[in-house]
Amino acid sequence: MLSKTAYNIKAKISLLPTRLGGRQNPVATGYRPALAFNTAQHYSGEIELLDQPQLKPGDSGTVFIRLIPAKHIRKNLKSNDAFTLHEGSKAIGSGIIVSAEIVSSE
Image 1 (tube, one colour):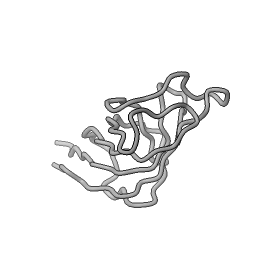
Image 2 (cartoon, helix red, strand yellow; image 1 turned 60 degrees about the horizontal axis):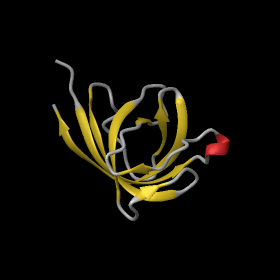
Image 3 (cartoon, one colour; image 1 turned 180 degrees about the vertical axis):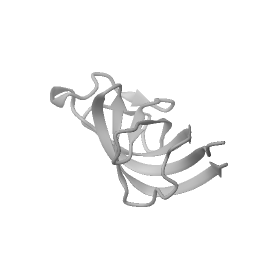
Image 4 (cartoon, helix red, strand yellow; image 1 turned 60 degrees about the vertical axis):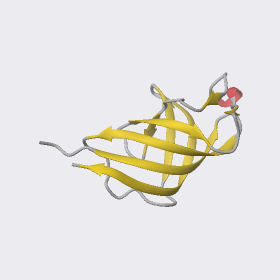
């Protein structure tokens, strides 16, 4: 059986401005983008905004991300690792991990 790893991540993210190909609408707690950690493979995560009620295109903020369990995710994500936020194949932002905690790894 393949293992499934899940993370709780605190990160600083920045959304691209709409004029540079980013989203047109703001995001709020519960938003579920795909995340890529220096790989072509994307993983699903749910974002909780920590310092504001919504994050508009072009803005930055601190978030908590619950990374949904995945079979092939790295088991060594750590502070200062970079990632990109995607909607489908379109990159809509980027982030840097502040802290990462593995919450399950079977």
